[in-house]
Amino acid sequence: MSSLREVLNENVREGELYEPIERNRIRCYACGHCCPIPEGQAGVCKVRYNKGGKLYVPWGYVGGVQCDPIEKKPFFHAYPGALAYSFGMLGCDLHCSYCQNWVTSQALRDPNAVSPPLEASPEVMVRDALRLGAKVLVSTYNEPLITAEWGVEIFKEAKSAGLKTAFVSNGNGTPKVLEYIRPWIDFYKVDLKSFDDRHYRQLGGRIGPILDTIRWLHENGVWLEIVTLLIRGFNDSDEELRQLTEFVASISPDIPWHVTAFHSDYKMNDTENTRPEDLLRAAEIGKRAGLNFIYAGNLPGRVEGLEDTRCSHCASTLIRRYGYFIEDYRLTPNGCCPDCGTAVPGRWAEHFEGQIADRPFIPGQRSALSRLISIEPEF
Ligand code: SF4
Image (tube, rainbow, N blue to C red; front, side, top):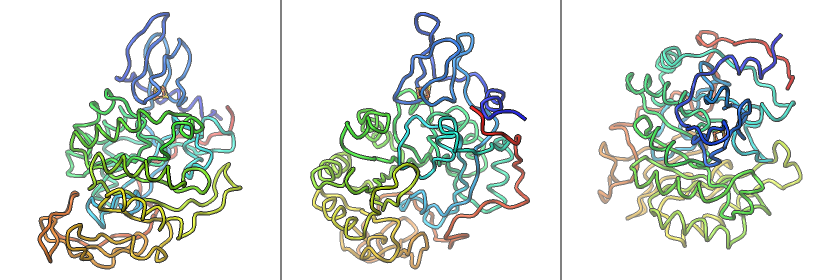
């Protein structure tokens, strides 16, 4: 039986986002760490490594696939109701103690995180997505930037089949990786976890590259939505939320901001779950900062209409939601308010076609993806 590390080392290809630097090292540009990687070593993410002066990156597998309503990613202004065929890889460039996908994101750091990968090809995944009626193919669950080359390979196939593509990411990017993915990506969700660099350093990152990614995505016309998981005592002070939402509004007041409820997970078990009133307070701060589209997530039916999309001009309800379920959809075919004609920022289908699912499901027996190998948790 092979270890996870052995399996992953067999499923690689030379990457494109790197250059040689002094003393037999290479510098990787796939995320904001820009690791200088010595010969025989891996970067912080543990899935990209230097062998013989070349950077090897994950290829030919996924950590898992799931079909999600696009509202779960969450995207609320990008093809509402669409089914999002979602794949995750393994590893991450951060190590958040409250990670809600830790089984895959920390698979190479934490012996308790065991997630056998599936053999995959772009053709098989796209065929599977089309068979299930998906409209969007999404790299998600762990950090997609660290497998940007493989993501682009899959997205090329997806786009040639007419699918939309998206990253659900912590936003710890570099100009090089963003330029690299730009031709192949339609939507991008950034998880803006805090507005305090000290908090980001606790999670293993820095705030600077994340804010730069947000600026870059907006300036380059990638549809962007931002999420902040609200954690009591970590990122929920009025002052921090004011700074965070004022920053987003300074990029554009039309960027949707999702403030979502935390529930205890992974190593953060002593923090209380976020309450509806916490989300409502955060939303009020975002409103004062000037944001036009604020959504409160993870507490369906308990957030006073903050799951719905309203016209920023006349306040008419345009899309009514309960959790991921769309109860009513009133946008015109060109994405405008039917009452006052104001255009709603986003990427809209000509017609709302209903939802295949309003909750996640795993593609069943007929899925062509198969287990690469049974692995034992050995590191
Ligand atoms: S993806 Fe980020 S963490 Fe991984 S090797 Fe590259 S720069 Fe380092």
